Length: 377
Image (cartoon, rainbow, N blue to C red; front, side, top):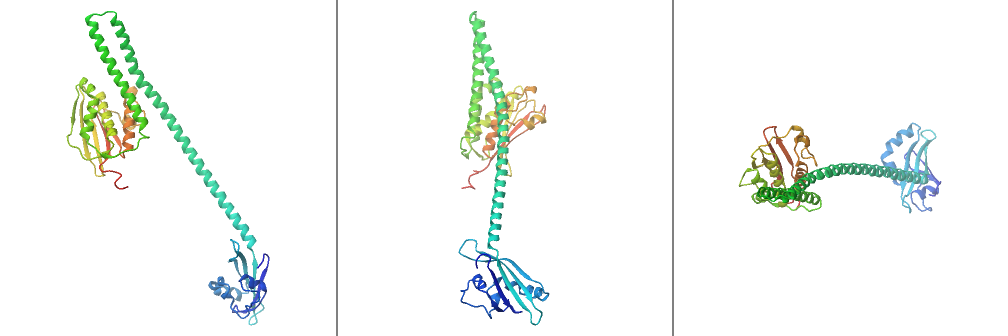
């Protein structure tokens, strides 16, 4: 059936074909030399089979029965579409039924094109919204990173400025003492040299922490069962001078539950926690190290000091990147504890602190008690 062709057929009350035109044969793909006279229309139009009762009711009331966009395959991808109508003619019992099928393929193609365009427009709008959301997220991340960078720059400048000022001051005193080479001045000069040496080591420690912080996001995480006795021994060796100067006492368990992580990073956590306990502990510092196996499959490690403790406000923000409490003269926490939190996050653990003013502080970190990659593998 070509565009705009209309197929006709005359039917009896049982939908048996009484006569038809050639366009109907074309519609149902029968050669033009054929004939449907005497045939049941539903045999060739299966769309009617499920609606026989509805057809009978509507035609009995003198109403027209219709089906929109019945489909037939054709050589093109879309196929052909037509609107079908059945209309009663005359009065019972001599009533007949007129079948009309009008071609609406062009309309269907247009509607399909419109649907495709609407879908494409909707997809474009969704893509734009997603792009705008990602751009917004990127802007927020960039703003946060810029804020962190500003805080980081101020903190590093502060951390390096203080020891550098000490070095300069002691160097100037040394120069002055060299002009008066008495025995007393020699002893003072030696103590100044020790102060310069200690301060230089402090600056070196800050630089090493900066290098570690810069490498955390770039280095691949390697998990293995940890020997915490070995790691704590390494941390104490790095802090031996401060331990001896402060006459600190460190109590540590000799047995530890199995935990998984990356040894050099976990040693850095122990070093930071013990270092803070030495700096802000009592006089002399009394430090306890321990652990607890948790029911959630994590091991909780802790470092307890006998210092002045922290307020609730300080506890809530102390692990925030580059946070300081300069008003309370708690300096040096910012970089070290930021590194500790980053390491714990990378190893699948967490950090926390419990403290009470005047009662000291206990700093915690958790690590998995089994290899987190076992389930993946």
